[in-house]
Image (tube, rainbow, N blue to C red; front, side, top):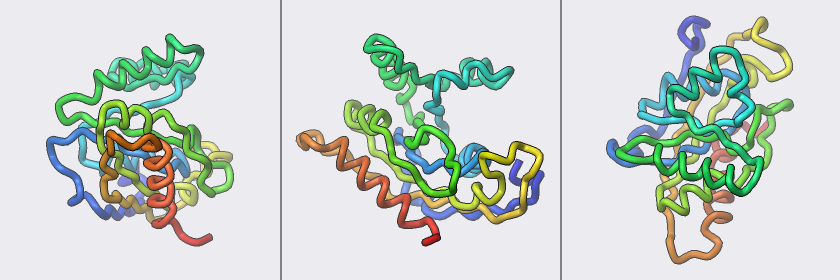
Length: 191
């Protein structure tokens, strides 16, 4: 989709990743083109962690389910445990997980708060968290415009250094979440 729309994509930081390591990638979510940037330019074998409500989308929901993406079900403790277990099964043999910890695309272009789920899973499995900054997709296709109004704008993906887990740290989840947030923000333009 990026090539079809003639959108240039610049990627930084791929050299920081180890080929056979599983990671939990956490990205900001500016717009729909974030998905195309990650799919096309991360160059990793991964599954998405996505809202259960996306399962209802015609064709896309079924395709995501068949591909083995993790559908997050927060309807109760059993459902949350089942989601975590599915995440554990996915994160084997170098397969990684990509999460938008904000939960949804931004309405304003500004980054929202991160949720804990991906960081808790990374802590439980002692996997490194890799923050990723995606910039430009809000300018290409803001959430409120629909798919009819794609604007030309360069896209940029910055892969930050992995944040290694510390098993003895009581505040590990909060620390990873805050460090990831700061890393993602550090590569976004000031405005």
